[in-house]
Structure formats: C-alpha cells, structure tokens
Length: 202
Image (cartoon, rainbow, N blue to C red; front, side, top):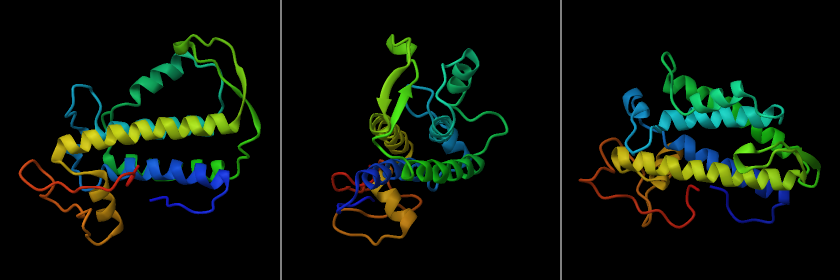
C-alpha cells in the first residue's frame, strides 16, 4: 500500500494511482478463467472485463486526447468484457505492461503543466477546455478508485474475498489481528471474512 511520508505532489499522485491499480489487479488473484468472466452482479461487468477496460483507459491516457470518434466509442464499449480468444492471463500481461508505462509517464509529468482537456459531450462539454495536469491526474485517481471499488464488489460476490486479504496473499504478508491472507477455499459465505483496516488496498 502507499503509506504516509514526506512525499512530493507528483509522488503522492503516482502513489495513489498505483495503489488503485494494485487493488484492481489483486481482484483477479486466484480466479479461474470461468470466474474471471463471471458477472455476479446485475450489470454485465466481470473481473476480467474490468481489467481489460482499465488497460483500454490507460492506453488512452498514454495516447492523444482528441475529440472522441464513433470508432473510439465502440472500442470503449467493447472494453468492458473479454472477447472470444482473450484470456485472463493475456489481459493481466497487458495490464502489467501498460501500468508500468502509465506510471512512468505520470512520474515525469509536472502537475502544473498546462493541458487542453478534450470535449466531454456526454456531460454537454462540446469544446476543449484549458486546464492543468494536476486536474487531469486527480481525475485519474478518482476514476481508478471507482474501478477499484467495482473490483472489490465483483470479487466479494464471487467468493467473499476482500481486497486486503487478496493483497496480503499476493505479497505474502503474514496474518495479523486485522487481515487474514486469502487462500483457496476461504472467504466464501460459509467462512470468516477478512476484515481490512480503513484505507487498505484502495
């Protein structure tokens, strides 16, 4: 997790962005291909689809910020589910690659640099808006935190596993009075659920 410290503004932004990405990735820990494609909530969202969507979003952040086209909107819509021939393992590989590229880009970004935010016609904003990188990056934190929450809910519906318990399992952290690392067969409705301390795992 990203802990308190005497960080610079840029380091805080990178730290919180990476914390959300880590929580999203951990939501797939220990899942089968079938579970990664499962849609346990009323929406069509799955853990695998969420990971694919985050890859799509980060690739977009690394690219241009032009006026969205119909083709780009169609790709955005398709990014929420794993297609035929796509696998969880392949999606995780893409996630790790673009995560590293994205965080490297953010690390080299001055939050005070001026940018031109593209139109957001879904909000009625039809023209580009002068802004700064600080606004854009805080929006990225907001967006990824929302998806980390989606990942938490999806995984809890699949087997009851919590983000802190999954992160503990991924990193090999020992059990303590607050978190028990996830192991196969635990975390379901018939097993005690790990209790995470506030803020753990994003």
